Length: 110
Image 1 (cartoon, rainbow, N blue to C red):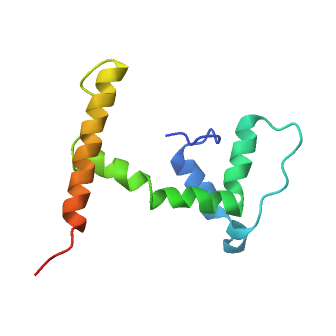
Image 2: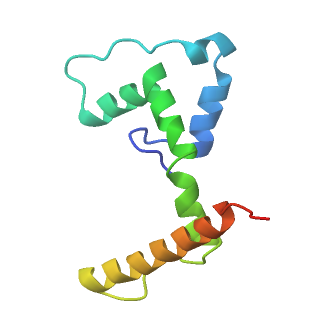
């Protein structure tokens, strides 16, 4: 699966990242050249320390919810067509997700 802005598969990208020395993983990349394409600019932005830290936040905020919706609630695709119908179906999925979270997070009384 190609990564955005890299053109390389995940396996090759991990091999490249793991082949660097440990100290090089925490260095800022070289400055971006002036005539960089948007893809090169995004790759550079994600390679910076701030970019990596910001992208890592997704693991703890957004991504788990979609993973749980797909695996636990078994919602892999929409079964209806049309924006209005899909929006209604998505609202039901979000309602089920929020109800599940409320049950899990409710305070235990007594």
